[in-house]
Amino acid sequence: MTAADSHPVASAAPQATPVVTGLLPIFFSTLRKDLRLEWRSKDAINSMLFFALLVVVIFSFAFNPTAEESRRIAGGLIWVAFLFAAVVALNQTWARELRNQVLDAYRVAPAPANSLFLAKAFGNFIFVGVLEALMTPLFMVFYNLRSIGPAYQLAIVAAAATWALVVNGTFFATISLHTRSREVMLPLILFPISIPALLAMVEATTFILTGEGSPRFWIVLLAVYDVVFTTISLLLFETVLRAE
Amino acid sequence: MRSTFTIFALLTMALLSFALYEALVVAPTEQTMGDVQRIFYYHVPSAITAFLLFSINFIASIVYLVRRSPRADALALTTAEVGVVFCTVVLVTGPLWARPVWGIWWTWDARLTSTLVLWLIYVSYLILRRYSSSGQTAVLAAVLAIFGFLDVPFVYLANRLFRTQHPQPVLFGGPDSGLDPRMRFALLMNMLAFAAFAALLSWIRYRLERARQHFEETQALDALVNPVPGSNRSINNAG
Image (cartoon, rainbow over all chains, first blue to last red; front, top):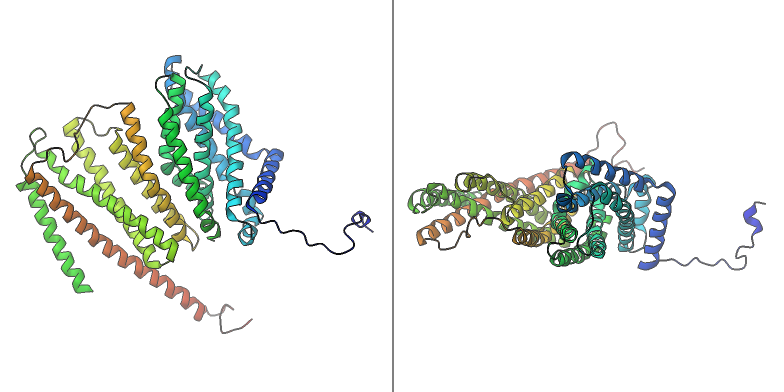
């Protein structure tokens, strides 16, 4: 008699466990699983943080700006550092699933593929968001930054920009699953397509930091970019997931 | 089929020769820039041809995703490759023209940057096709092509906005601003000639890709029916 037997499990009639196929329940359970795994191992966050820090330090050798200048270039530096760090996170999006053949299970499961995509994208969004929250004070220290424009707008830009990066990044991570040199393919196909979003996030941040000009058009461009590419990703994800 | 191709090839050669003559000899010399301006007759038609090809790539990719037709896939690959070639011509003739006229090889103005990004997007498409290790290359590439093409308006918008907020010296008032009618004719001829040339190149490349597809299919079928001697892979040996 094992310990399990001592529990009075539904002994009368065997009840069928309800098959969960809705978009939201699967989204939440997948997201919870990923966050819990990440919290325990802290793989992605640690490597991202260290990589971003290295990029900041290396950039400090390339530019040696005064406080005035640093406000002008900080926008670009920050987002380049976050972009490279985000690629680190995106590359390991599917790492666990590949190792344990979970991806095949996902493919044959009746769950809607989009719930998986959204869970992965949101998971990456949270990881990169945490990175940004941790790195921003560091940036302010290293470059003596003080925002002249309204700082709350930085949060809006960060949210829109991060989503732009991770939605395309998660999608292309799925595409690059089926390629040789997987880790290199992801930035190769992600960067060209992200260029408008990158321009928008850098310009918006620079305008907010320097207080010269309104970041409004850039934020709107980012928002439209987000909507368009989230829509296409949702439409095409199933095709890419099932492509084996 | 072969005779149609030959006729079309000869026609294209004639058109290209005539367009060359128009561009280098007949068209009047530009007032300020001199003879260097004649690169214009290669630069602009190449750009238009490249964009036309990329548009065809977009449509072929959508058709492929809907119908999974190997012909659509062959067309997508063809137009991407030939499009990248013409886009490269744009990016090379541009600086060649810019250096004597503006004194600089390159500047990050809206049009140049957008063309460079366009080139980057389609080169990444070709790299994906080359590095794909699965049998689903066509599907993945088609998806990327759709993403890439839908990105193009954003690229142009973002760069225009960027350059209006950081104004650059006004370099060129647009290719058609007050164009001499003889220049316009030469430009039109060259556009036609380049489009024909692109069609010819695409025809050849398309046939090559279709032949490669057939070859692969035949190889796969052959491996099924005629197994390697010594291996137990054969549909004739059940179990």
